[in-house]
Length: 187
Image (cartoon, rainbow, N blue to C red; front, top):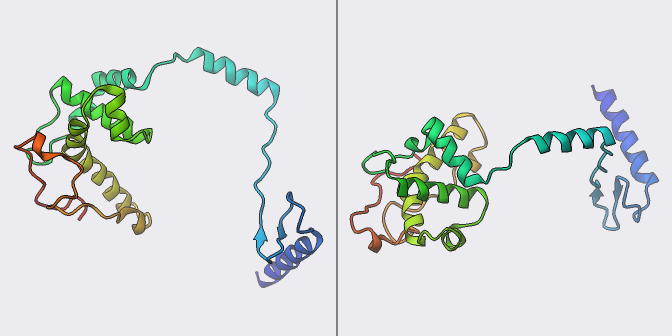
């Protein structure tokens, strides 16, 4: 093992010594003595593979994401998994299901709540309320599952807003009955 390491180190030193600092395509040391490893060049895709890819893509129907998620819910009832943090009531109304889908799409596409509100006509306050009371806990469940899988804890330990105070993105004045959860979502 030690012999292999010394051999590999010798090959690396030989490679680095043979490359000039201006050679952008090779592993090299730059002018500052830092190791530079350029990205790999993409392999050419054979014409037959491109044609097959295009043919298969043409066979798939195009469907916008919102109707696809509505169809998925009709078949699986997955939106019932989004329950209210306080009452554990599952999503029933069409309005609430639309709000949850809008929040999910806003997060999945990095559109954000403000731009999603502008795009879909649902108020920012409604989307923020839905995020806080229906989607946030589902996200916490995913984060907790990642922790259980042994993924790095620094990824799973993102700070959550405190249970009280003004850290909530929700405008609670639009929903006077809304109250913050009394327990942290990520223990």
